[in-house]
Image (cartoon, rainbow, N blue to C red):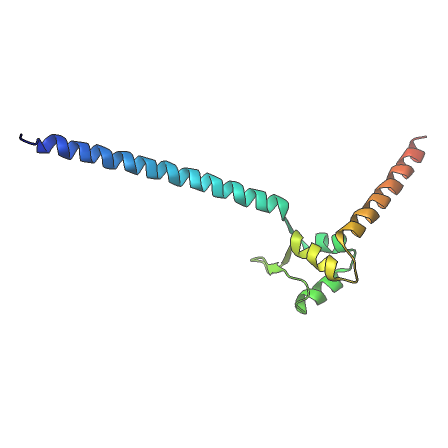
Length: 125
């Protein structure tokens, strides 16, 4: 039995091309998956400015600066040398500060929202 080298070579080329297409499809799918993971992480742990961090923590900008310089509060710097804070780092900082925790933040925020709602209801009357 004589092997046809041309057809064997052609089959090999087709097989390799099919594998290359599969690899490319896999790489695209992996890239989309990684982009989705990054988006989810960014949504769940957003990056906040110093003003937002100070507002969330209920402290001044000076306190934020002092605590970042002392290494108590984690931040990173932008290309413009501005501080940026991850939400999870701010929440951990809150838990470590004098028993201040997320639950107390939520309670105080609810109280403030109720007060605002009450003022708005009275204003409409």
